[in-house]
Image 1 (cartoon, rainbow, N blue to C red):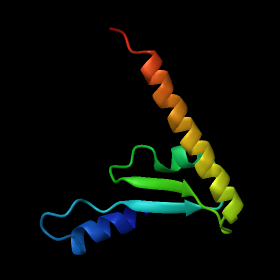
Image 2 (cartoon, rainbow, N blue to C red):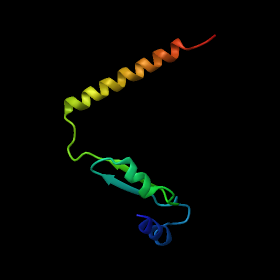
Image 3 (tube, rainbow, N blue to C red):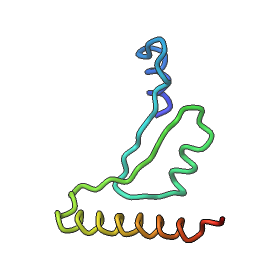
Image 4 (cartoon, rainbow, N blue to C red):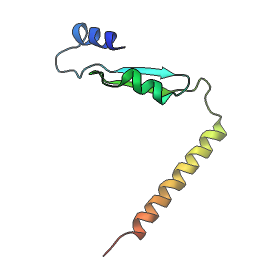
Length: 84
């Protein structure tokens, strides 16, 4: 990845652009392997886990509902922590 990022920086970057970043898509997450493979590199390289099958409509709806409730609870907690 480092090789490709340096090549892109040298040959494809235009004036005023931010340096290129690398994105590594992984079928599973191995934090230790990613840490040792990417630590200390001067280029920005990101690793992410992805899914090969999209969640069902019901799963998405449930996740959105949980997120909405979580945000409402946070808002209520912030309101209760207000000190006059």
